[in-house]
Image 1 (cartoon, helix red, strand yellow):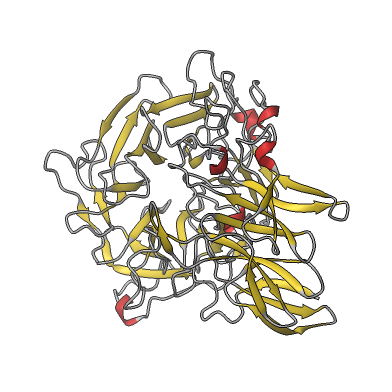
Image 2 (cartoon, rainbow, N blue to C red):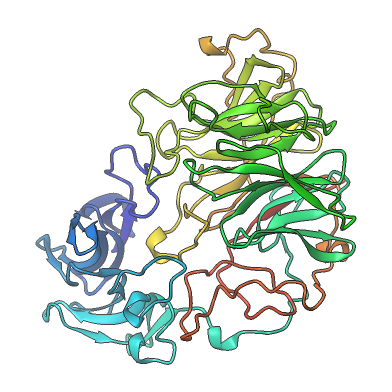
Length: 559
């Protein structure tokens, strides 16, 4: 018999849940897999304790907690011969990802105390620890990792070794930290497209200059803007603290970078778009191009004179605007030209290489009655659209995902010839239980892969009569290519026509001593490890190396 967690029997299937997937557990005979029987509703991570016993985890109903109302994770035991479900772990702390030892004992991950946040130091009980519970001795446990040298570290997903005599688990090896610079932080990946190369680097929001000679990105602290070029790796701009910078992009004509300055994932806070000039000449100047509202995701026109960007504007809704003069900006009373208008989210915009179209992601077609947010984030219903930069009535929808909360098709990016688009999308759903993964401060969703679509050959010629409202301009592409496959979320991609088999030949990842020392995201003063498990640049003065690196893809077009 096989036990699986499945969306079968769940109305609508996966609804885009970020943490609790609300799956059901089914059992089936391997000789007749189409004959399935549901044995648990709202449960996941099944593990066999005996022929009739399955342990699983699930999210409890919210209860009153000293810090407010909270829903905890718990581990349960079900006897499939009679359907009796029994709680194994107490309801006042989190327990998940069980590994059955026998019909009564199970190893689980526990978090007994709530932490003060991702950046705070933690006590032993605030880390993920491994414990053994016995269903016949409710509330009692044998603590395993709390008494090891790595007690102030997160431990993940226990499993059995040697017939259950040993318990294994996963964790980062902070005792094996390296103090040397990593020679090759770029990683070349296999590509599913024969004429497209693919590589990744530890960082977020990559952008490549039009001549292909400079790569720029933000570190995982969202603190500094880095540039990699023929002179090595250096900082173009730095803020005093983390979560202050995101979404940089090059001007398409001159030596200027644009970057969003302000907190990410918070539309209620002010975010400005800044220009950084003379990036490669080390005579940099930085000044604000906006001075009000929440502005993000700028993109330069091919002639470098204008910017399209997303802003909350006066009405508080995210729409697209055109900055007519990228040098003067829209400060001191100067106003942008509004491109789109509606009570929806238009975002993640990019100007086409030919300059006539702008691609963007939008929720404008979400159904009436759709929720305003999902755990504080945009709730889904995203699709990709093209709009004429000088005529908002010329609008074409080219790609969509699920017509529900799980529909995330975001961060579209044109190929250099303008004939294809890559997107970050949840078209493949979620392939692993998110609660089993490490926490990432800036990776709010545990899914999202890179897909490529080819635009219809006539998309630049037809549909210019402004009849999108009559649904005559819906050209949802059905054929797409999946480029990546990961249990973590992929961020934005960027595309260049200048390729190299070894990216390190183009960018030497070295930094002169004394230039910059990022805060160590891995170790606290008391020896405890931090939540900050994302991959950082490894510099000569780096205090630690990282594991659990969530990849950021650079999609490189091969000539």
